[in-house]
Amino acid sequence: MRLERKRALVTGSSQGIGAEIAKLFAKEGATVVINLRSSDRHSEPVLDSIRRAGGKAIVVHADVSDPLSVAKMYASIEEEIGGLDILVNTAGLSDSTVWSLKLEKITLEMWKRVFAVDTYGTFLCTQGAVGLMKSGSSVVNVASTPALVGDTEGLVYASAKGAVVSMTRMLAKMLAPKTRVNCMAFGSFETTWVEWLSSDQKNSYREAIPLGRFGSPREAAGLALFLASDESSFITGQVIIADGGEALR
Image: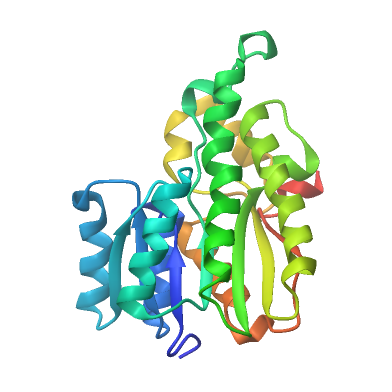
């Protein structure tokens, strides 16, 4: 197994890509910390799935945008599993009410709300994890292709993820050689984001993808596994694009 005896925190892992990462990591031998902001009800399906398959997992509630909440999360992790080898910063906020707004309609409060989770949360969780990590550890961040190539929608979200890209490159140098830091930049994936779109919008996005389809959360998890495992032991500071070729346009 590729993550045997590893301990991994996956933030925002009660659904979507985060949930698939948590399940795959557990299947590959890791003890997984499932994180979500609140409500055990939302974490139960992921936890049950892992345990039914013979994997190991715990649930730790935390608001990744709140420094005190993050500190309590890491205190719980240290007490329950003794440390951390892998952090995947999956928690994010791509607000449907903001996604398609015209420039003049976007407010500073909208920026603060999205940046609090996507950017500040990534920083706070990485800052807290480093103290529990030993040599050979790995941090995997999440960004999106609009942060790299631009788009006509999702300005606030893409800007927050652009900061995550910069943070990845800075932290890769700051934390080397002890900890590797990489980033996954996703294109259009079959997550709750797709539910916001009209049929015309879905078709438009799909037509822009050379592979002709949206990605699946399981495919995203596969990339996270590679970056978290020793298979990528000579890779750090990189932004790996998974978008079916969309950024080639």
